[in-house]
Image 1 (cartoon, rainbow, N blue to C red):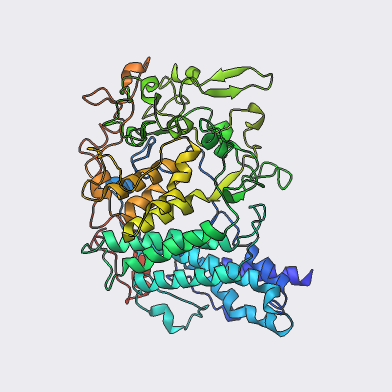
Image 2 (cartoon, one colour):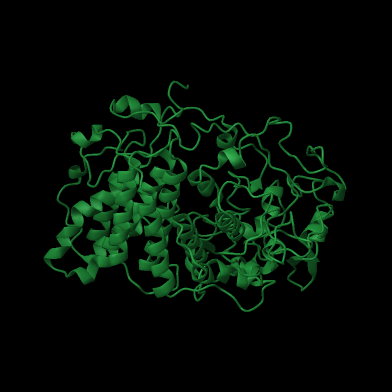
Length: 575
């Protein structure tokens, strides 16, 4: 009881410091020589606090790509529009860094009475969460201070200038090397503690991010001095390949290409799923009605509620012959959603609701179809869909699983498919990809849905490629990533690391399907008859500022506290 009390006081003190201090400064030595961090159980209890929504957020109800060109909601995204202002105050994220650094400063007390094998899992977790914390800041702010121990109010490091993002990224990769070395190799049931394979997945993600950032932001305000993108791209490929060749995971499939992809996201339990590496279980028994333990995604996704997928994403899906809609003889046009879905990559109608897909299975067995929703689309708030296309990824039609406030739909956090996509892209960017690489990665995803294999030396030109100056293979790998990970929250990160806002965002608006298939429509329409929900709000398209909006501003309060800090590109002199 005394030990639990001491842990509570320790976390209370650490967690209660000001969020406005530029390194969230607190004299951690003020905690005193408490009798803590002396047993593996202490380390485990301390690391439990990192398993929170900060790192493992809920799977979004209607999707996580509203800050990109994949989805559109009610409001214009301020980053995409270029209307953000300089933050005047706020923390940039060092609170969690302080917490994990305190662990590193204290954990060696355990060595007096225990061997490494007794506590190495928790040491690995500390490296894992240090990497995640710094990665978040790297994405948001670029160059940041790398701090590896807990600071006091008089620590000179508080006034250090920013370290280069290359130093930070290198240290993140090294932290994940350590995490992979110490963490367990067991697959587990996927909702307990992180393991080695998750560290490798995240390492492949971060290394791919930094490698492509350094490559595509070269000679821009966000370029990295002494950039070495291939160092990171090779690490991304190596980490993903180790997971692919040695890890205990595989693609989920039952041999049903028309349903397996949809079903993966609609399952209610992932304990024995081969693809889901980490997931969050929600359980009313833990705290009935507490939103930390419940997830009413199915209830909220019964209707679009002003959320939708864009035409830009819908047009990305190939036809069933493996050809893009711009050249495939199988494409039947945009006149109706029924036409669009015909002969397409089956992920199209497993991600986008179609009229003939089951909408609800009532508790008495009555079956209703999405046609009922489409027949009333855009007639009221619940039925409003600015782009027309309704996202159904993660939706289960069984009404037994639809319970407002008390629903327990699980949330996917990490899935193996990402590792396959990371591997293929890294190899393609390195210029070393061969057919075998595609066969152990992207083609496994394609085969799940019955799509033709991607061939290194047989890619048909798409006149509508987003990146015509890049190789056909990179264009198709990026398409595959967009389709496979649609609405899962990866798209903005991809746009940012590819420096692709000029191709995908600037001067463009999200579009939807043709309004001729609607009974009524409150949204603007473009000159070709497609939904154009932001036509009035942004008549000139998104105003994303290329030399500024890839990163956030450093809050003014941080600059005042530390005169050695500098503002991010494009934010200087902006109020």
